[in-house]
Image (cartoon, rainbow, N blue to C red; front, side, top):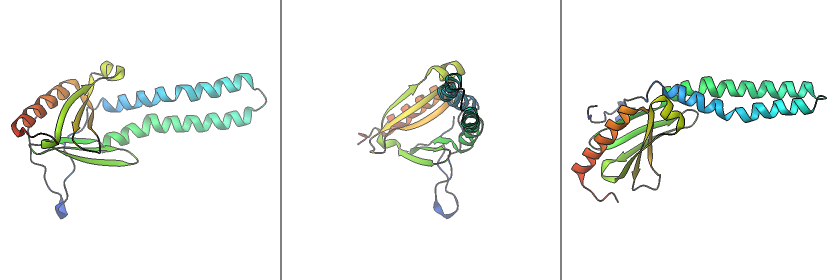
Length: 171
């Protein structure tokens, strides 16, 4: 993983970060979304089981719930993957996240306080991890999500080495 200087786009704006999450991020986000739809779909099923007099309304509600579920399970992970980017240079950590609302963050290396790795149950199954870079910023930590485990380890090592060279007080 090379350290590059963040290029400028036309007009002097920072170019988009160059690196993507792991391709398995799409599966992680799809599975997470699918799990979030279990309760609403079961709720409609239980409603249908105990109230046999509103089949038309139940069918309409089930249709809406299923459309929303398919959108969040199929479309949103692909959209998020198209948007999510990250990059580390000697000067800063750059991230872009989101799908409907997008956020770009630049965390100067001199402001880095801690670098942590997080692996939830689905991330462990898929061999992924999230790197969290805590900074002296009121905006909160910078998260680099859904990295392959080896990339996450390399990122932590790289950030630790770069931060050690800067030896600021991160305030």
